[in-house]
Length: 295
Image (tube, rainbow, N blue to C red; front, side):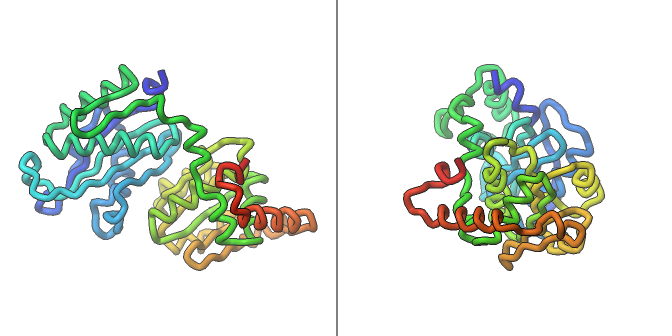
């Protein structure tokens, strides 16, 4: 059963009325180094500005981490809690699947304030591949197909944004080069990075994306150990870290920069230009939806 192999662990992080951020519950367990990484990305620190994004995710080594953020407004069972994050660690990339599950878990925890109630639902997914609640909905693993998650991306919008320069992104993906994407907004960053592997649809490999990274020693070391990736950053300073990329995409500025060491790789030929024009025309074709476009 897929659920037995995909779900690894779950956790709760709370921000109390004293503005202290605490890791309050984990099942079954999680290494301290993972907890440190997650705490830095959980969004409960207002300096990170995640609070406008209720659901987000990131990739670290062989795991995906999905986080669902909830603001608490005078809930009787959580009297000392201002905000909390439900975390799911899994082996698969499927944002829609885990947004659905984490929403159910978050609503249940909001109502009862008891992690045991959330654990019961989590274990039901592990054992039965589903969980059901009276008021907060039902989650069924088999309803979420990985190919559907791969094709649920705005590939046409990417081409419309960058026009003929999209060929640079396509070339980098085809040659398995390193792409770094910058945008200060987490939701936009996730949206864009998620779309890029669709341009090499024949591989169906979303393990190359690291949609939300930070300029920490740990995460930089992880990227430097990889031969190819698409990595997203919210820190504009990443543009100066040219050892991290062959191609740099500045989303707010709508600019693509080739790293000096990669100039020869991206030398454009007549064929490249023809492909660029073809992609641009297809993106403007109103009869093609995103699924048809990427295939």
